[in-house]
Length: 355
Image 1 (cartoon, rainbow, N blue to C red):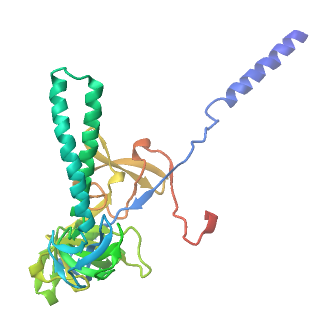
Image 2: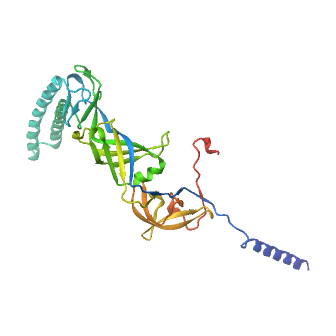
Image 3: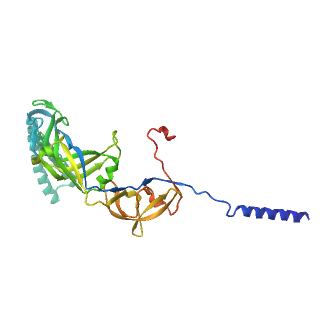
């Protein structure tokens, strides 16, 4: 009887454990944190006009590779110089002597080298003897070429057409290698800088017909292209946008001039732009993950891409609606109906991210 009682108790224990290991035990799934963004459709307008300023794209300081006293400084602030035009000249006397000295030695060793090379080719001298002659010849050749280069470097020439912005020295002063002589503004390419509100950034990125007007230079409808769009707003809440264009001396467009940027739109269709990082490919189709705030899960949605936009964005032709939320990063590591949690952007005043 005693053994039978033990058997019954043990069996009941097994039944109890089996019941606990059934469907009543739920394994909590680890929540995946994701970056989400709300989809916004922008309604094109016929035209947008922004006021801006012309700025130089490059301002370079020019200096000599060699040093010595200046004997010519041929430019003044504001002068226009052509590409290759001589701006300043260093006294050539010592550099000419160096060329003469190294040339004489090079010429002598070149003759010896050619004679020994002929003997070597006929197996009349050993290899080590020829190698010594060849080494001396190459050293003399390098010294002569370096002297010629230094003589040429006594003339400072404009690397591109532009205007002299500032002079840092005067005639007859002794200058050193790398010491700035003048700064030059390259006007072959200029920039137009405008400030735009956040709700018009989509229009900036999507518009393909953008033109420049500079009234004081009688320039109108000059095509420009978007150069950059700031990732962060300035203190006034506006975003800086830069456009670039090819300049010509005949246009008389200079840095500091006021300008207008006009953006003409082809139609009145809605434009939907999303980050390219939110799109992933599968079975030759494009998809995004759409976040459902109610179920806190994501679902795969097929989208049709119309074209590649500026700054890492793509324009969507169909598949998304305004105010839907999509995942913008790590899309290849997610799956259908996965429970996720959007990453909340920390406040700039939240020191230590404690709030």
